[in-house]
Image 1 (spheres, rainbow, N blue to C red):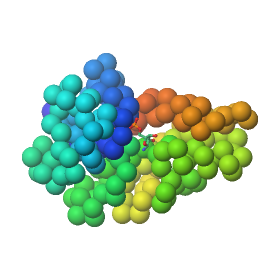
Image 2 (image 1 turned 180 degrees about the vertical axis):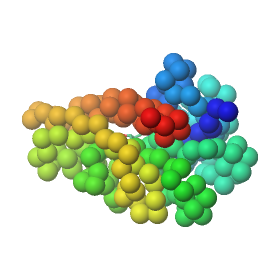
Image 3 (image 1 turned 120 degrees about the vertical axis):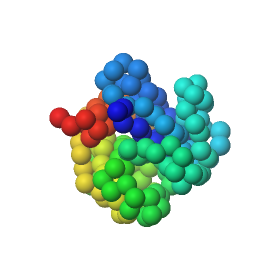
Image 4 (image 1 turned 135 degrees about the vertical axis):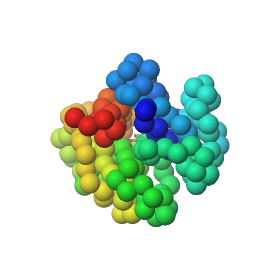
Length: 182
Ligand code: GRF
């Protein structure tokens, strides 16, 4: 039985696309049964439509009841997951964060703000973190991290690009491990 993934997104969906690419290449044995978008007009919706994946706008409950996923994957999702969903999917909700948690996480730490804070703090390295989602934002058990150097002439954009490339590699890999072990 191929495991079913429900993807949650709020943005361009490049992590969502990386998951679709990993499925197409056989690196990830799964299917995406739903895309839950936090708003209309985001790139992730077009990617879902191009792959004939049902789209639910701000309606996670209907998506989950009608598509029966085995795993929920937050791929750049900016809204909190309601506790009744966290309770229904214990240890079955994964998130990717564009920094080395527990540093640079929590309220307001998303997208460009994360990389801006990393550069402002003078960090010599950054990266991304895949973690289990719990009711405490960005604080669930860490499953894996990928590290990148922070270069002295880095801008927010150059660092974001370097981190995002690692996200696209790490997330499908960890999803495969969570679903199939080893
Ligand atoms: C990524 O930086 C991810 O780490 C964060 O939100 C961004 C999503 O980008 N959670 P995309 O929509 O997957 O391109």
